[in-house]
Each structure stands twice: as structure tokens, then as C-alpha cells.
Length: 153
Image (tube, rainbow, N blue to C red; front, top):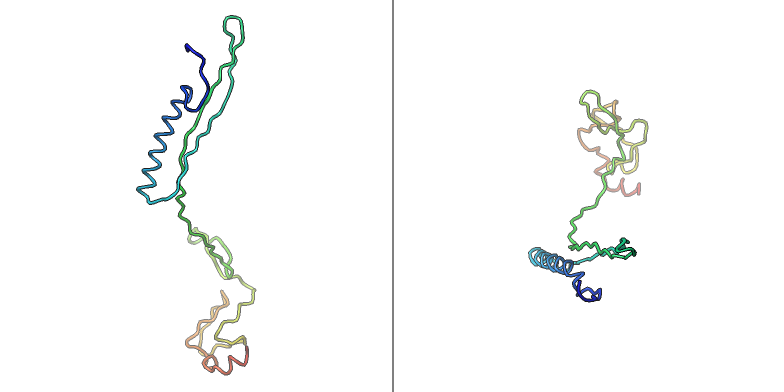
């Protein structure tokens, strides 16, 4: 180094970083154009450290400027949701070797819209006592009478 040099972003010390920033900027602009994105960002992080060494009997301070140039595009594709199993419990099925959901025994079932809030006793339907459900052959006649349902509300 022949002459004193100011430490500036446009000086020789940071010339390699500025070249890298230019490359990252060009790639960012290309990606934005190809993907139709209107906003992006280039970030430069410069760490500063001093290394002290002895030269000719005196300690000198040599600065180091490691850097990282990054670009970001706000591309995000997200679907949020939640699957609940309010009417089932998780159990291990030894026959299949997999976890399954089975109806929870001993809990009151929510009234369905066809019983109008009352208790429905199936006529001609089959029941499955293992899971506490009723399989209907047809809707009960009372469920077709609108006046009965409205009166229950």
C-alpha cells in the first residue's frame, strides 16, 4: 500500500464486496422480472474485527471486514387450516399396525337436525352397539313435518 487510504464503501477495501453486491442485485432483478414480483431486497452484512499482530517490535491493528450479500423475495405460498377429531379418539389398531380414530364411547352424541332436538328412536333401522350409532333405513316421518321442528326451536 503506497498511500493512505480512506475506508469508504467506494474505496479499494470494499471493492470486492461491491462487485458481489452488483452480482446479487442483477440476479434479484432477473428473478423479480421472471416471477412477476414487485418487491425484493438486497442486504449487506459487514462484520468488523481487529487482528493485532507484532511487526518490527510494535503491535499493529489490522482490520478485517468479512461480509455477506443476500437477496430476498417475498414469495410465500401458504394454506392454513385445522383438522379436528372432536368425535373420535386416537387408538392403535394392532390388526393393521396403524393408528386410527374410533368414536369415543360413553359420551352423549350431539342431536342431529332430523330429531329437532328430541330423542329419536329408530324404526326399522339397525344399530351398531360397538360404536353406539344407529343406521337408518329412512328419515323418521316426524322429521318431515316442519311444524314439529319449528315448535321445538
